[in-house]
Length: 160
Image (cartoon, rainbow, N blue to C red; front, side, top):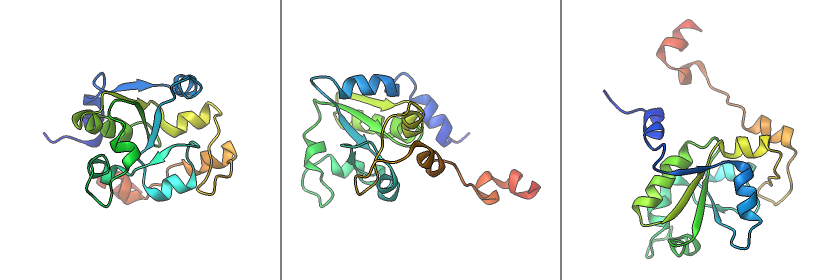
């Protein structure tokens, strides 16, 4: 039996710490705020993100944390002993990225459980790529899935 995206994420339960949006707001307001690492695609980040978060797409994560590459992000490469909270839309990709960071020597990694969807539901602010604060209802619309029948899978697309 092959692994699936969902089974890979489920397997990480308990291996990667998860925190809720209200926990993250407390950490942000503390005297030692975490590095907020948004691992979504650049286009997703430009649409909506937590102000002050660092954009490093998951596809380049492994080389972004090491020196000597065009993709190196020095702030991230220097954060192995810092608290890093990994962020995505729903809290799944961030689990996979969190485990990757652990394997690469990051010691204090957490994933934002419920992701930015939960952050928005908790009515926390987000900004666009220009730094403009976004309306929560507009963010809800951005995060609404728009799957085609083919993306639903062979069984569902035949029924459509």
